[in-house]
Length: 113
Image (cartoon, rainbow, N blue to C red; front, side):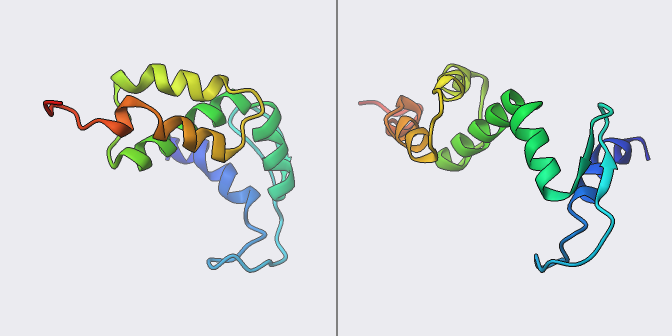
């Protein structure tokens, strides 16, 4: 029950959509775990873009890297994730290019060159 206190408000903010993404009428006002009040997708988007931007960028970069590598991000990937997060105003294409140029992507771990 305690875990729901942190995750449910995000779901409540997205209640304006059904299971397959169609718009529906619903009460989408909620208060997040850090006491921030949001209303619907627009409120959640603004919250993530402004108050939680650094957290969002770090997690997005971590997940994008993990997807590109076909494995979970590891401690050794932290410098690359830090680089991805620091790209000011980066578009997703720039993040992908940085990943593709990285040793993690271009070299198979444990292989002899």
